[in-house]
Length: 611
Image (cartoon, rainbow, N blue to C red):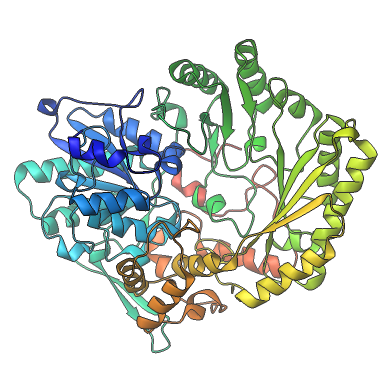
């Protein structure tokens, strides 16, 4: 660390974000390295270091001889200001070297509101933000993550996208880059070769065409690029790299604990949930693998809490056995076990007893909709009886803090559905009054609502998002419907959700909006400290676009989408059938009851997902 940087760190909030040197970080001898990679997370250190995917890919890449992967996070505003004033470039934590001098910058794009931070990090690294303005082979700028299943809004800035799970795919790209670097390839030749790797999307090899009304006419591949790019998955999770010696942060982060991924994918098929479709098919770690990995991770880190992670942890086969095996080792050491992502239809007394044996934490359930009719529309497969039974079990076990999450603006939602949220919360309160074993402490029931955002590759990708004023009207209706002071109501501001919808279903033309917002000072847009709705709307208008075109209209049945070039395994025909089922109020059973032929099993060499 330079003297100048040391002086800067005395003037910023949380300097530990920028120092590196953490326990279990990986440092290599540069004499043994011929390819350097900066894993760039376009959010703060606290958010990025809580991301299990970062820890997995950081470790997997560093297992490759000759390749050194280091970390870089978006600086907070005070640190950015200091770096720019001192004319210091963005640097990697492990070495302190400028990331603009690395061979590759790999961005993790898990959510759309991080897009402006990608451009800001490129600029801080001293690099042009547009791919076309970076003619050299290196540094290669590539990206992966959930939001990349619609890569088009960021197509002008990213050289290539890696689609799906990256443990193997990232290394294939980096090995090809190493070969290209050693053999003196140019960038165009490398990108064309990279496009032949399954799971790699090179936007410069595709040309979008639009109809006069602004909808997509076609997507033309060039130079022999594949018509569609299919995502990659890891079929056998137990055989893949897992970070049992993960980096221990030097400052507090959002999820300051060991995170144990038990499975990928989800059996449920909620029609609004992008992750539930993007990560199909379901694959599981074995209980034996998880017990061994958990013990190693806890021993190597010193953490006193472990959480089990997946899209629906309580659906993991063998969860009681896993929890018992973990607690047998954790309980004598005063290490607590937490289980997020619990479902209201399979929360049992036995599960509750396991969760609270070391330390009792709050409980969260996500009914998503207040009425059974609307829960059937979204295929939530949770009944009011399920929820109230789970609440009874919790209250009998001594819990008195409960959070309930819902969405407003779901397709077909009526005022009666909105009022049903308040009615359901009242029934939960009555359940506490009837069954609580700890009434002296009172009860805290929190109802939270967010604005529905239609997402690509879901049955609701055709749907409209309600307008801001209509969302706020429904917020007021719900607020007025909640009468008890024991029920707290929180709602998310809708302006970020509108921009998220524009970017989520955006095409290549929205790249100009992202660049304009960044040039006008946009960054860290998932933080209220920095998000400016006016700045986004001004940029949309300046680009000659209409936010309502992307967010607030129903798509035609046969409309071509910007993301149709990406194949996630689940077919568009299946999503359309699920959309029709939603309007008919028909429930689709989960994968354990019956395979509905979504198409995701075609990604597997073996027959069938882990159900």
